Length: 312
Image 1 (cartoon, one colour):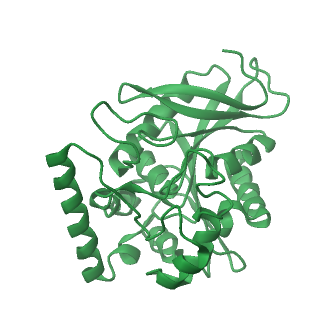
Image 2 (cartoon, rainbow, N blue to C red):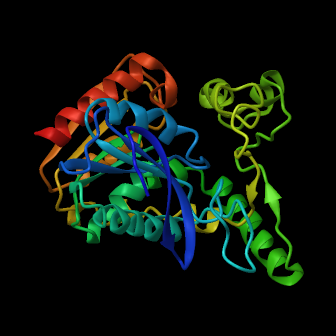
Image 3 (cartoon, rainbow, N blue to C red):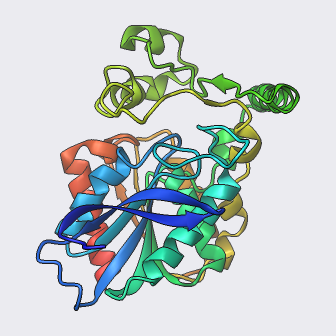
């Protein structure tokens, strides 16, 4: 297929089906030249028209090739036969990422592959990199890498999540029908006032709604392939923090970027403490967790730093 500068729709195989992606190429792209490429990993519960559509053009503007894609069963990518859409499971996200790396490796103009993950994408990239040394460097922005301290602090709440996920899995097995829930208590119809008043995590509720809510900048109205409703058993895998357990096994140089005021900062700082690789850490006092998703000054700060790190 003919590829040109800017966004190109592509597809690659994973689990025997075609995952749909957007390949962002830099201005003046020349297929006879060699470029550094980035495999992007997005937050839960995103599709490629959210974080990848923000970071893809930014990294392409800095001279990189960037691949953002819909994971298995998300957005434009199909679910496996007999399975359901909106089933985003960590183990599969890692394998999808390995296959994305394989796809980039087939492109003759790619000389080197790096990984860039935002929020849950940071955990995906770090986990994938443990045993995939085709990924030469990794960068994580507002990353949810060391999530044990964040997710497991309130064991009563965790046990309630597990009970709900177990019930959902059993229900789906017995009925053969999907069981959709709003994992964060935010559905596609709620107003900002309704959500913030009922949110279990008030510190992040407002910024979460401003991005994901019905009226948000990248919510279900703004992004046609996105919904806040997801398969109810996903907590059975999202509560595993794979890269946290294997942090000391990561060999590649890494960069961790986060906002010190974000309630998720511990997911970065606790992860950094476990690393034994060549590692850089960049903390911003002025930015929160979601600021790095879309606010121009935060995105510029993170993408400038990532570009410098990958080019070093």
